[in-house]
Image (cartoon, rainbow, N blue to C red; front, side, top):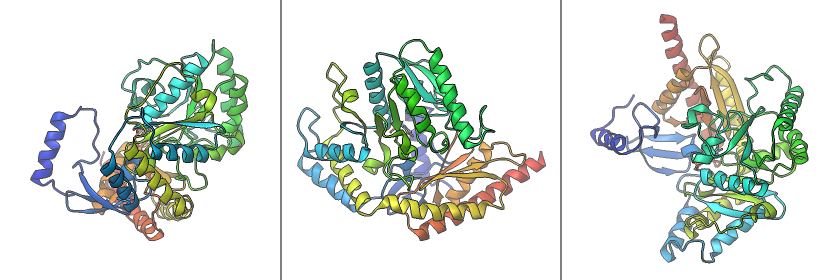
Length: 443
Ligand code: PMP
């Protein structure tokens, strides 16, 4: 355990005095990251960390990627911002590229500054298009922190208010280990979830605006239903004329290795009607957006601009980031190095009863932790997070019960770094287990 130098302590005191009580900070001794390079981040505590969380998946390619830095500096040196009332070459270039990559036919793109705002915009489109404020969302979901996106977040620890402008109906399917269908095999699980959806829609009065779903739930603890779940849902949704919005804020841009978008694991479903993105695209710049079929995108009757969404600086940076990703096949790297990382974590965790499951895809891996009796243990995750930091590894945690470690390094992770990081993680888990189990024994 490090000890906060006076300067850092002072910053922490000032932070606490001036920011809301609900703005959570990681670590008993919170960390300020001052700079980064590649897959490493450096703290004001003077330490170098292997970064397996990338600021919640925002560092998509690498820290301080020179191409992004150059593109941002070049654009900022010419014109910093003009608002979307004027034409902008980088915005149109990026929109064209994303429309093509999305797999959505006849796609149009609207840029925002965050994932929350992207989902908000998608909900505005769907509710307007369908003239309904009823929305289907998945249980255990997270979609953002605005009034409407909190309303469709099925995770009480991230829903500070139950008031919502939307009527939300929650669908089973994203959590394989809890709920009434957990005991079923994959095919029967999909069938049961689909039948439940069909039954619910039979009882709902009036139209439903959309189904919004994360292909792999991020904040929910990197959990997902079986492949083919959304392919089974699609004909049901189609019969009711309900658009499907895929929230790709965490799963987009090749992170899952086998696919560029998370929805492609359910390829039989075809592309969604809309997908939302944010986080990694800007490699740290605040950019998000919605891609949607033109009919859905163009349904708004009044103007709705975003002053900062799609600004020349963020779109120029995002273009450079995306170019790097595609030219270096970082999706392929996520698949290859992700497999090594997973195998190493699984091998190391085999002898650690604190680990219940290693799951996920590509470079989006979840490690679910339990106590001695096999019950979900938030304490184990909190301890592992601290020990990992002590060992020089940054990871995340999540899940509605707070017992899942989230591993999501920049997509340029090398094989050596994967092996190194897995070793540090296993050491952290071992220390956490010792501490937790001996404390439990003492009870
Ligand atoms: N959707 C998902 C799936 C997310 O994980 C997040 C952020 N954790 C959001 C939306 C909201 O994005 P932002 O924090 O950029 O508003």
